[in-house]
Image 1 (cartoon, helix red, strand yellow):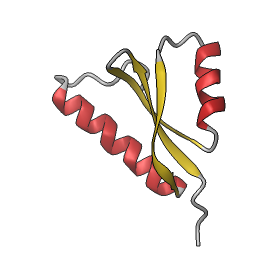
Image 2 (cartoon, one colour):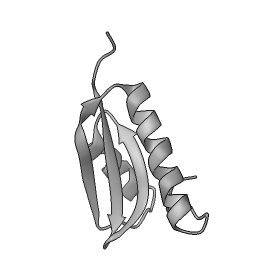
Image 3 (cartoon, one colour):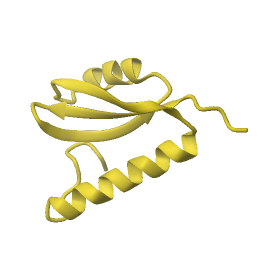
Length: 79
């Protein structure tokens, strides 16, 4: 059985989502994003920890949904 140790998160700048991401340590990852110069006002963990495969699938689906509703543009920091 695969471990459920990966968290899903959203970075926001005000009310706008600027990145969907996954990490085992979202608080540390948010700090790393700050050090990289990314501008955001908050980070929200989405749901409980899940398997890495499940988290990667969630991230892909969320970016695709964002693109569909924003004229093909991705969130600011998702490449």
